[in-house]
Image (tube, rainbow, N blue to C red; front, top):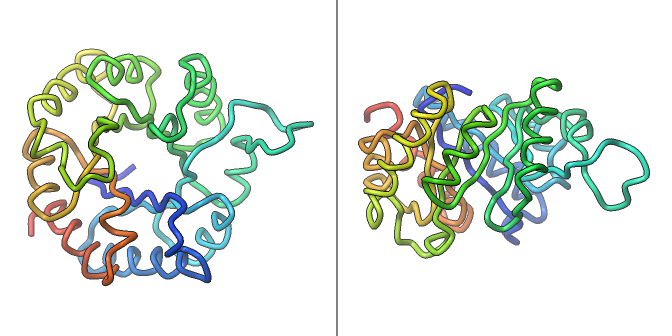
Length: 225
């Protein structure tokens, strides 16, 4: 993972239907090339291969199931995510929570498959626990702020700093990013100022009328513009 980074979690918004997921990914790729910014996109599983084949920037899966390939109706093992073209996976988002032993299984297996991992956590303590598993990054997102427009970097800066310090005490090699309510340039700039190396953003981008413009706004602080 190249940092500082903007990770766009597309979730399952209706704006992605009818080719929207690819168009959003292509807008992100264009901004990444123009600014020299590190941008990762995470489309729904149904569009994973399509998006991965359409852009050159990293593509992550939004989740994975802690199972091996086999008789697993409705499950998505990491091997299938890698085969679809993903280079990483988001684990334990507040909308798709897992048990600690399942998170550990996924992080460890992802390493054997050369997949990067971003483990989401709601607070500093759980972020430190996630860091002990040595994922690529920990993304601290207070669930009560997700989708509210009240950014974590603006409303809970002390929690962000505490998370950065807690993770670094456990494993200094783990990247710390943050999310929840990230809406504009200042939110991202503040997150970087507080010691993180990027942000995880969803609705602020997916629901924007001008995808390229919004991605540009949020990516500029990553490159000091």
